[in-house]
Image 1 (tube, one colour):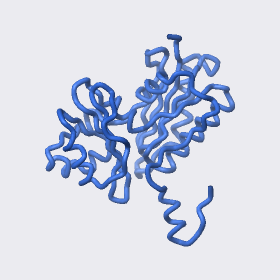
Image 2 (cartoon, one colour):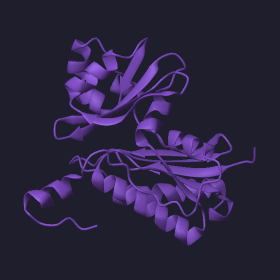
Image 3 (cartoon, helix red, strand yellow):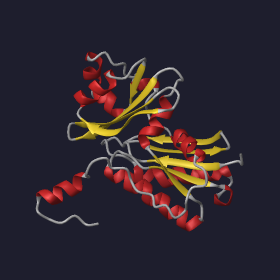
Image 4 (cartoon, helix red, strand yellow):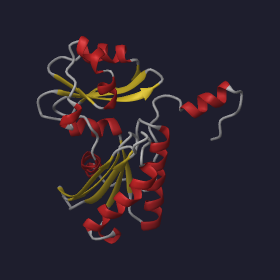
Length: 236
């Protein structure tokens, strides 16, 4: 299999994550959390991280692929990441491929024994959830559900389960009451990392340069619902 030098990044969560991978060897990894006021630093941190990542691969001429997290997650963060990937692909000629943020989180949680259940806080009293078995098989497709519904879905999975991510942490007490193990946030398990984005992106065989990158929404964006509530048409 030919060597693949890839940069991967994601801004669908509150963290801005970037990494670079040279044929399985991680050459750069960065995760920038929210500012002191709680606002994500995507606009400031993403391009700076990408610049550092590309430098470790020897520049754009030696970068084979861009992998970008498509969500689900925050509307603004997804749009920033996807727009950045599209712009870089166009300006550098480097093909870009999309990656599910939930799948990347599952890869970061994988231990070869338990089912990985990444859970993101979807706001509006819901979470985004999916599940992948220890062998990599997807058991639950991505869905937007209430925390109680998520707990029921997780409880239906046979064998050991590990739940992690911002949504699992926020509703940790509810999950614990249902007997579901939630990874300690201090352990780093269940926290998205750019290395997982790179790993999934590098495995894509011959990404189609004509395939548009579209954020994964699962449900209607808040902005569209607000427009509909106010009786105004949604653009696009």
